[in-house]
Figure 1 (cartoon, rainbow, N blue to C red):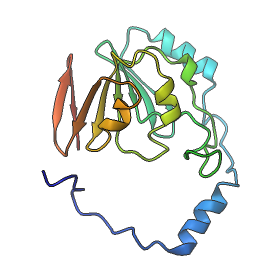
Figure 2: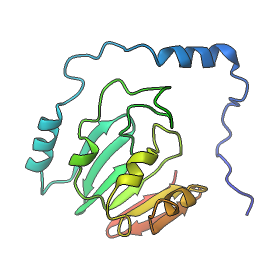
Figure 3: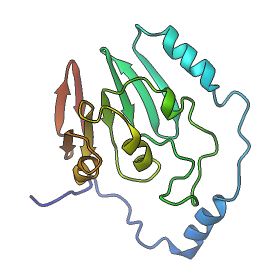
Length: 174
């Protein structure tokens, strides 16, 4: 194969300059004002999730992470639970914790990954998940080995427009 290609062609971001990186670095030391009501307490999020036990739901965990309950399956998107979007305890940090912490999640059936940035692919969290032998993981090309090395066995790589079904759910890479 030719390898992974990004369609359509996007703006070249290879020459962002010192100012871009300096602003990103300095932003990691500041905390914005978080509007009241922006984040639901974990207690309320879990209570609401449980009250809607038999309903299809979408719960925003924070950042890029969604907990989707549909067709009797629990799907987690782009899991990010760590305080920093970095392999180190520094760098871009989350301003608020996840609405439901990792230890309070229901059993996960499917993980959907969009890409491998630290704020979408939390290695520490993914290593800690139980039942890796039954979770189905859908990833873009090039990420299968990341999950295999962490003990996952049902990993499906997608190129653009590939699709795959699990139960009554169709997953398509767009």
